[in-house]
Length: 249
Image 1 (tube, rainbow, N blue to C red):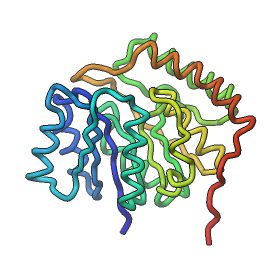
Image 2 (cartoon, rainbow, N blue to C red):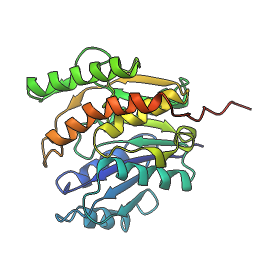
Image 3 (tube, rainbow, N blue to C red):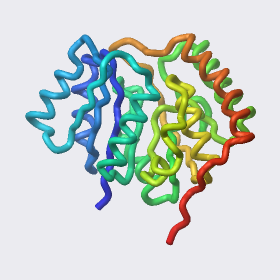
Image 4 (tube, rainbow, N blue to C red):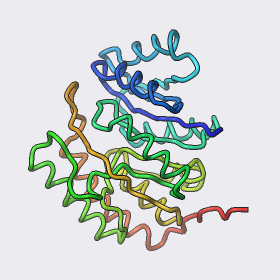
C-alpha cells in the first residue's frame, strides 16, 4: 500500500483551512496532509492543531515557521519532511479551493498507474480552464506559460501550476537545496529541473477556480521574479550538470 501526502502552505487561511482538510479527508482513498504554516496571525495553525488532536490524529500534521518565508521554501521544507517519512507520492495543493480536492485522484492515477513521475494539474492543456479570474490575469498567466515554454524549451503548457504530484524518487533526485526561487518561479524551476533530470511529466486537465474566501498572495514582485527567473534558469542550465533519473532495477 503506497503512502500519499498532500502539502498545503498557509498564511492567514482560517476561512478555508478546516474545510479543505475535511474535503481531502473525505476522499474515497486515503491521503495524509502536512500543513506548512508561516506564522499566520489569524490562528490558522490553531485550527489545524485542534483537528490534529481530535479527528485526524494520524492523518494530519503541521510544521510551524516564523514569519512569511515564501512559497518555495515552504514546499522544500514539506518535501524534505515527506522524504524523511517515506511517502511514495507527494502533492502540492493550495488551501483556498482553487484546486478541487477531487482532482487529487486524477493526479495520483497519472503517477501511480499511467507512468508519470510528475503529474501537473493543468489549466491550459485543453484550452483555458480558469473560473472567476479577470481577463487580464488570465491572459497574463496564459502568455507567461507560453513565454516559459519557449525560453526553456519544454512542452509543458502550464509551467506555473501549483497543483502537482511527485513520485518520491523525483524529490530525492533533483537536489532540493539547489532550488533557488521562492515565489511562483519556484513552480517553474521544479518542473524544469525534473525535466532536465529525465523524469516523465504528464499534464492532467483541471478547472482552476479563483478563491472565494481569504486574500490572494499573488503580487507584481512575484510575477516579475518568475519572468526574470526563467532567463536565469536557462543560462544556468548551460553549465549545470543535472542528476539523472534512477534506472529501474
